[in-house]
Image 1: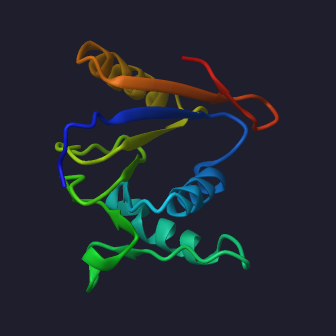
Image 2: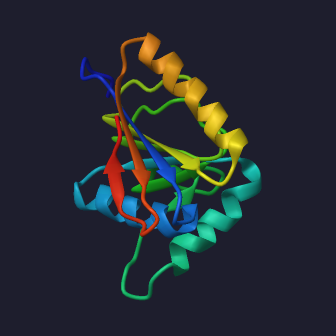
Length: 153
């Protein structure tokens, strides 16, 4: 599925909202575009994200699965702590410093930043600088105190 289309990196700096309050809505929009999504996160958060996506709202169903379960390749949203390739996915979400070695094929990568953690902010500034140095297409969105997103870069 790899093609010559460059991957866009969108950094989301959360201030007023939590990760749990933002990611399900972004995944919902991803599915509405007809995209397949990969959510890469630490092993310690896999079960929590799985549960969240089943229960975050009664009126929305986010079909998803984990890559350590049967038929993972059929899931429109795949949760993974180990995947190292974005092949087969249109959108990739990177949570808590997660990374993927091969982004070929992904149209967009959403890097989630916990604005309450200086470690998160520092780590993702480093990622931004590295990607900028490689000529990547970058966008940076930060929440205001009311939870609205403003494009800052």
